[in-house]
Image 1: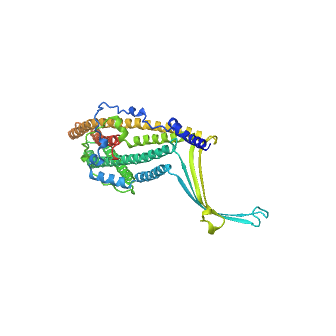
Image 2: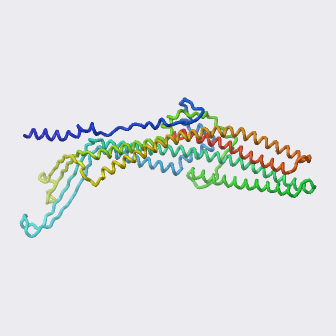
Image 3: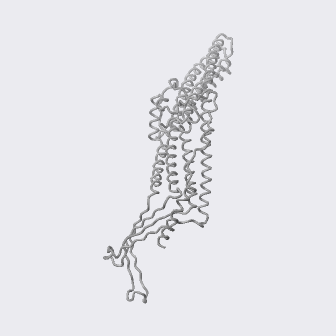
Length: 464
């Protein structure tokens, strides 16, 4: 009879392990959404070489810019916040690994009880009891719930690391972008200041021509208005430069201050703009990696929520010393021990388990959609940067020719005016067009640099 009882207990204990093959936690598989990546460019290559693997120091060779990027990576607030998020995730990973270990609790207790006048202890009116014990409990990971939670914590940690890398990549791109914008503004300010000097001299010439009877007061006022227009443009440009300096200061993690920089004409990025293949976005773009790790986290939490429907096997043990006399607490007669093993099956708990499982499924679908959007959006950003670069390169050629044409037109109109073959309005129009064309040419050069920065970030460069 005793042998049969032992066999029965062993059979009951083995049932969960026999069922585990049917209800074990599922393994994560990458969705097919990765195949949706597409650059949509006329020059798509199958070459896996990409500037995303190039160090930012090799791409951005300006010494001042390199110093600013290093300063930003050290002091930027978003970077420092992301690092703290990694520390939080590390703590949870350690907690996940400890999930396989038993729990141990110590207990020191004193109990005093006042008894009624008539009781089973005779003349004793009160009892004091002393206890010093420890409790050990352990849950078998039959359904993979602990393993799923551990994997979820690991995915969360990797997500925080990828998020930090994404912040780093975005910060480098932002610093480079603002730096190039500042140099473009410097160049536009230089051109505008030269224009103001030229127009001031032109105003003096026009006043002299008016006194000689060759130009009317209308011509003088138009020349004067042109001068004021250039002065207004200069005010706006200088204001934009100061605001951008403040923006750069924040990126560097410091209070607003002056930003020293080089010149736009010396900013030549000669690195071949290799894009690689779209599938490489998954291992080059940290935001895409973070989106997948978020999906993995949600997937494992769904596994853990599903495991909550099944019974849990727990083992617990309690032992220690207990006595009504403190001086006899550590006697052998005070020693006690309890061992309990059992299965716990949730039956009715106000629908909490069902709700948790349904919520985890919905969150998993949300993270899947986020991952899909990250892939598609990354492809779109690469495509945008490629088209913008091509457009800016073509526009530079067109604007250079436009500026040369207006510059020649200005010179010709001034010569014709001196010979009495043109009116001063033609000269003013030519000068105005030459200034606008020059400013637009500088903007086109800046747009080309900005598109390179955008492409570098879009491909996932900078964080390595």
